[in-house]
Amino acid sequence: MSEPDWYEDATIYSLDVKTFNDGDGDGWGDFRGAIERLDYLDELGVDALWIRPFYPSPLRDNGYDVADYYGVDDRLGSLADFREFADRAHERGIRVITDLVFNHTSNEHEWFRRAREDPESEYHDYYLWTSHLADAHQRGNIFPEYEDGVWSYDEVADKHYFHQFYGHQPDLNVANPAVREELYDVLRFWLDRGADGFRIDAAHPMLMPKGHDATTLDETDLGDPIELFKEMRRVVEAEQSDAVLLAEADDEPEHLDYYFGDGEAFHLQFNFVMNAHLTYAVGVKDTWPLQRAEEVLPDVSGVGTWVNFLRNHDEWNLLKLPEEAFEHARGYFGDDDGDSWIFERGHRLRLADLYDGDPGRIAVAHSLLFSLPGSVALQSGDEIGMGADLSLPEREAVRTPMQWDDSPNGGFSTAAPEECYNPAVDEGPSAYDRVNVAAQRGDPDSLLSRVEALVAARDACPEIARGDYRALETDHKETRVHRFEHDGTVLLCAHNLADGYREEVVGFDVDPDTVEHVVGDGEHHVAEGGVTVELDACDYAWLRGEKR
Ligand code: NOJ
Image 1: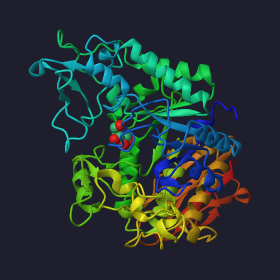
Image 2: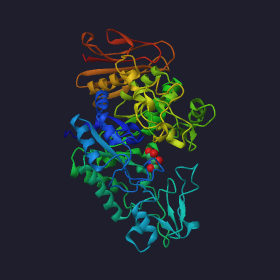
Image 3: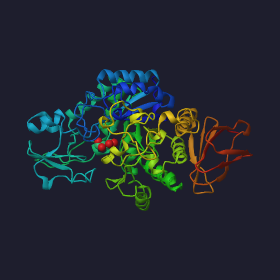
Image 4: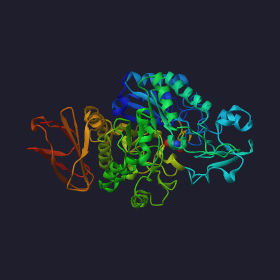
């Protein structure tokens, strides 16, 4: 399967083993259960899976609090199950990207236990400590609703330790060469067991200046910070030449190209700027946010690849919107009680909730997503329009079990509902008896079929990842047409975000006899040098022809 450039044009499906499919009936999803659903993922047409953390963990942050980087939580399976899952995925041509959390560990990790118990131990320097809180480096905590700051007192060590997320997630001192060696070993370990790459959690916080030890209180000296990521890439590529690193770096737009390290650090990076703007644009039925995102984003061609997405397993973070739009989005998309707003920055709602469950709007959002340059990440369950359960705490609201059919627990598990890791959504418009895979499969008009068609269309259109790209002028603020040119073909992707009909006439410099309608319900009429696209509410149309 060696293909060095595969990641430049990939559809990556994000899933949490715990909530995907339960193979042994204990109420927790597991690798054996996930293996049974690989045919579904194959049919959907995805190129890679991003498997969220599955390591032993106290699960106080959904597994992003790792207690052992070398194991599998035994409720989810074993190392052998992971291996088999990766092998079965590979047989289908699907790669496996695992999630690695290197900014911090759980406070239950053996390293932290030894670090706090013995200040002389080599593990003490795996973390960041101070005895002089008043002078210590300060910054805001990333979970401001739950944590007052970035230092918490540890009774055993009788010092404060540094943490940018929850207090139970002490930051690793990644400036320490011994810590770096540990991280490289973890990368090698999972590549040896079938992983094809890694999503590196919290890459931005990893590089932030941090308080150092009690005596100097200097900022931790990371050297040239990007060197850490470059070395990680060297380690990964030495092991497997087409393995990838994907950054979760929710940084300011002007700093984002930094993470690609001129083509020597991360291969891929989530595009949080586009995420906020794209999902917002479709919701407010206006295309200005797309133009704005493209204006503020750096040009990364030749150095790295964006991974665009509509939603993920966290809150829908709106901080990248301009202030007025941020304020607007807070009320426009929220639930009536304000329960969905979290961390002073976003909504714990799923994509379908943001668009009032309208399959047409969800589909046109996917068409835009798939027609942007870069790779794509899909959030498990969004392809069928699953909704959130706001009665669950914090971001668990968007982490309910995958809805496979209308049997108990949505076909996720045969256990009693109260045994399930999270309960399946069984009430309201997105309950599993209404929204599920079985009901949508085979129905050509279903959301699932439409998303499947877009994955296939994207595969058939190398223009998107490789071609020259530009947005065309349109007559309506609700319509977006962009154009790609590659290897003698021109591809137009037209979208209507309005609630009603819109028509656009745009240039299309192709031989009319070669025009092919790739995907979408919109109609078109080709005339000399141009094309008229007729789009009903939320319609899209991708048209391709040979350049004259
Ligand atoms: C980002 C992850 O996506 C999120 O779920 C987690 O809480 C934080 N990083 C901390 O690891």
